[in-house]
Length: 545
Image 1: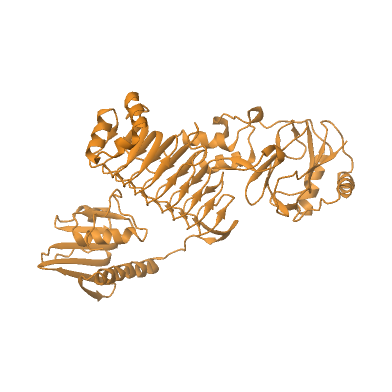
Image 2: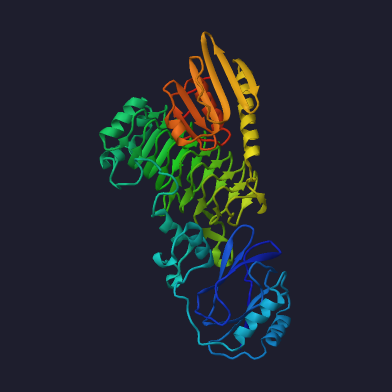
């Protein structure tokens, strides 16, 4: 006898839920325990499983619709059962069900099509690759083939965690993490006796000088580049330790991991606490003071934090990597943000939400102050989540989201034509001159059409910067520093620079030649406006700004 598939008890106080994705097409057989449809509340996603073998005769609620609690979702029948007038059966069952009114139901034509297809139930078929809808969506986002992934769910079904694990075990994300990253699992493995002693006497080891700590790590197997510094009280308790050149750990930093990898010039500021099974940080990644990596499940076998290069994580942010937390290049995470890969409280057997799922943050994303990302979401490349938002569904590339729950607002960037780009570049140059003046520098600025000349007198030294739309190599009087800045440059022109010149290509984000304090100050000024020059692995040594 046909029956209704209804919204089960989800333990939510919301009045309605979202029909996020259907997993079974009308007329297709399903098995007991197979996921039929995924529902989403503001805090979590729920997979509704079949309680017995059968066939989905018709969908009553469309994908993307919002439906009340306990509403009717679909019409089910036993395998091989013939359903006559589907519309009449649905009407009778919904009437008997009572409170199953659907908000935003499927368009009439779609309902007719799906029901007509289901009136004569064909011989059931089963999808070749069994995967949850969220897993299929995540695989598409990460560019993975489902056929290449082994499922660990019921009946071998592929889950989101399976997709994330496959991705985490694949090629390095974004730009190269570091030359010391993941080539050899044994590279940088510490002597087990040394690690055991380190765990017993952590406080005593932390009190040693930076040079002595680095010496002991190297002596016992760690791979550590030149210029690495561990602040007062900083200690890394790891089985495998690989650090690039000039990595910095602030005072009282504590790291606990099976594997810890950090690329060149990466910095963990004072009082950072990092705890996870595997931590891989790219080059020139900056973590502000009091960042916490860890929380529940941080030492689970699946626990992974992978952060790309040239990103920023603000003060008091919390990253929970009990499942793979993968962050791309040039990502900005503002202070007090929380990125969660698990969500649970009371018993899932009593209908309370319980989810473990990884997070993926694409390249050049921005996460605002005090925002929270819930398990299983993805931020596409170049997307922005504004401050104090809660992200419970994935965010497409290049969009701005805000709110709780976060909603789509607009495109993250505007189209910029040549004239507008030149105007913006000129504004950057003028603002740079103003910033130098504000810091007490003797600065003069001259403009000739679209060209701008900045001169900085520093005692007897004269530092000159010429800005033009196209690289200008006109020879001028020899000065202490001659810096040429252009909106765009040809590679051949850069390569032909005389040794006394330094040039910056703003549009191509490249710097060529030797630069002095004026060039260093401009490079830092540009970095804070999102223009990171190649080669990117550089930090401002301090100076005029």
